[in-house]
Length: 311
Image (cartoon, rainbow, N blue to C red; front, side, top):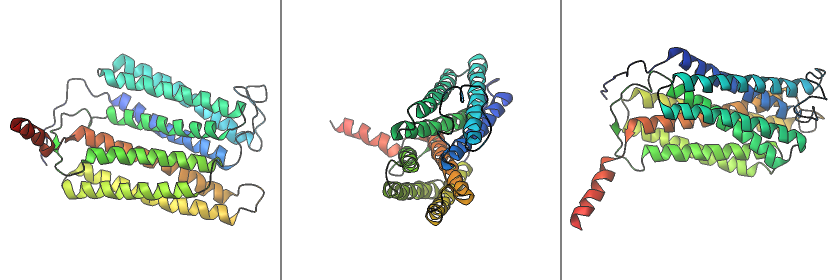
């Protein structure tokens, strides 16, 4: 699948791209810190916000160490996001990318406020689920910025026609949306909003969609290195996530009579949450790549024009 590659003058900023990658990694670390809070039942170990027991630094014992570490990590990521948004505003020539940087900053600020509300209102399910959900959105924003600032994204790539049905672009959006909804169901289950059944149904739907889009990519673009990587990414993430989901559920059943979360249960649950976030980010990347590379089907374009000629 030959493609011409033409870089615009001074369009690629290596330092900015590496900083965006660093922010993606740190955001993944922040998700891990948040999952450690929930999995260790440490959400209300600090009963006030924004202070901690009325001070800047509380005693570092028990569940407090998880909750306070999460707050510190969140503060660092928020500060670094301000720097990223300002950097994009000063040096990024594409206006929509600059605006996306401000959107990412607004998302992390909203996330911090919702996190405070979970403490103030003593972890109501709706607020806790919103906190977990916005965290996923912010992670996807960081992954998106890392992609948008990459050299590959800024190359002038020859578009490819997708003559299959349904379009890969449509499938990719559907898969990302279903994965996002599935993560909402997972957050509601972890925060005891309802049982495991809706989450299991959602997992089955997402798995089916992942295999559907991966099959479409394999059949329609077998020689495209980019779409081969997308397929491998989707298969690897969904396979790992299903294994971790089973392990996390087993650990809950095995240690349900223990008075506090056991390390093995915490480990599997945290890994399941983090890989779930990575799975959502993976489906978003596939959607973005598909919209960047693929044109609308020629059949879809030709059919309306013939219908107009017949009228």
